[in-house]
Length: 79
Image: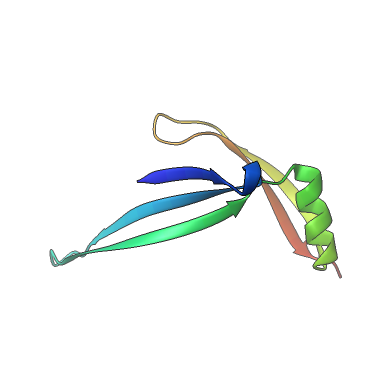
């Protein structure tokens, strides 16, 4: 429903209307707000390392007509 840049460009906030339709035809709706911090890959890796995680993989998700493309960094516990 809405996307806002907040905190001087350090994060974005998403307002969404979630609709669920069950196989029996029952539907429900709920509003949700999600805050996403805007980090560079280097900042994300550093934050993950401080949390005891290490990078395992990088995956690229291509854009479609419905979604923008993205890069996914997969982390795992640093053993």
